[in-house]
Each structure stands twice: as C-alpha cells, then as structure tokens.
Amino acid sequence: MIVFEGAAVSVDGPDGARLILAPLTLELSERRIAVIGANGSGKSTLLKLINGLIPPTAGSVLVAGLDTVKAGRAVRQRVGFVFTDPLSQLVMPTGLEDVELSLRARLRNPTERRTAALAVLERFGLGPLAEQSIYDLSGGERQLMALATVLAVDPAILVADEPTTLLDLRNERRVRSVFRRLDQQVVFTTHDLDFARDSDRVLVIDAGQLVFDGDPGAAIDHYRRMHLEADPLPEHHP
Image (cartoon, rainbow, N blue to C red):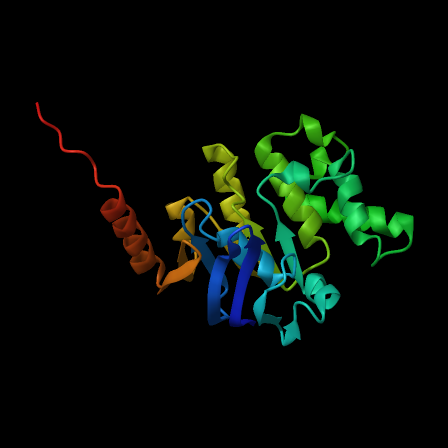
C-alpha cells in the first residue's frame, strides 16, 4: 500500500517558492496504476516521491507503513525504479554484470551470484544477450535489461517513468507484455494512452494538480477533453 498524506513538492526560486506538485492525499492499492499528463505536469515528481528519490517538502509518503524520508533505505529495498532512458540505469559493460551488481548484497558468493543473474536474464528472454555490450543492444533490449536489474531483487513495487517512450512499436509491445505478467504492484507514467488502458486505475496530473483519479476509460476521456478544450483545432476554410 502506498499512502500520500498531504504530500507536496515545492522549490525555492527568485520569486519565492514554486509549487511542483500540490498536496496529494490518496491511497494506491491497485495492482496497476498509470499516471498521465503533459510534459512538466509533475508526473515524474509523483513517482520519485514513492521511493524517496525526492522528499516531500510538505506532508509525507508511506510505503507499507514506512515513511520515505525516515526509512528511505528500507523503502528503496521495497520499491524498484526504472528510468525512461535505460542507459542512465545500466552502469556495467554487460547486462549480466549489471544484474550481478544488483544481487551483490544478497549473494556474496560470486558463483551463486552469476548463476542467479543468468536465471534472471533467462526469465526475461535475455539469456543470449547476457554478455553482449549494452551499447550493442536495441532500445527494447536495453529497457528489458534495465527492468531485469531492478526486478532481480524482487521488489514489492515497481515504479517506471515512461518506460516505453524511447521504443519502437515492437519493443513497446514487448515491455508492455512483461508489465502485464509481473507479480509486483506497478505504478508508471506514460504518454501512450493505450498503455495507460492496461492499468486498473489512472491518475491525471495537470500543472502539478491531481485533476482526475479513476477508471482508465473515464480518466483518458477526461484527459482528451482537457487538451481538446485547451488547444482546439483551427477552423478550416476552403
């Protein structure tokens, strides 16, 4: 269970504090939750609150009853975070070494660690790419590698910031298929409204405000109406 208790984020600027995310009070318990909104709306900030990458400047965020500020390390052991660009997450020369790095604290024995890492990669269909340079992988393969490194330690919650944005259609479908099969609770941001429909609940963020929270179909319809009203198509005169 993820609980926001008046959680807000603001930053100091030359003209005083600027609100990035207005106070949120809500519980996130559904298995799949999508967050949609325009660029700069506060979606990524909301995600980063969940695993303590950003602390709230007001209120609090609790994950399984743990405060993300007071118990940040314990929260991050429960919440895995996948970034938009997998190259910002893959730090070792090969995917195998990245997964081994994730498992280092859990498995001290190098042989056991390598065996476990290979098993993780096989689970995601990445076994044949285990020792290939991450720079020789396609965008989809890199994103799956990044997912594997995060999921290797079995977090209870997976948070993903626009995980399909940089992918072509084939690899986008691969990543979406993996997400559907995961046992973890998943919270993700996306601009892909079809991907958002894969969820059980959708949050719509606009200018730092939660403006809709509900069923995917209703939320997406609300989001479309917002943007059609804000940016109407010009009339065409033959």
